Length: 139
Ligand code: ZN
Image 1: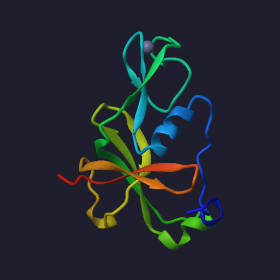
Image 2: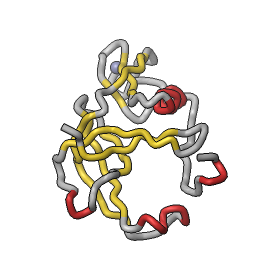
Image 3: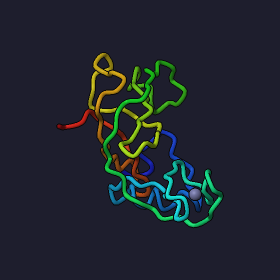
């Protein structure tokens, strides 16, 4: 799909988050790990929330987690979503303990449950941007 076909908002990409989006294009879900205190963090920032260290390594996450919370969106804030209403937005808690806001896909809204196992899937929405989304876990 080309940029001109995609009519939903795209994420702002900053120098801090560029590695995250580069990995997503390669269908890898990543997060920053502090080199000094070894804690994980998301979203990406240039220094550790816990110890303020600027030393960071990007690590690959398993892509597995659970639904920590979710909502069903009924309001068409963006034109591109009108045909998909009502659709779910979830807070994923990854196996590593990070929380992401994402789309929940390939599930009926009535079947969504807090705590259900989910896994990442990658949606190549434009030539430049791939969005990590989540679906019910396959196993
Ligand atoms: Zn730290």
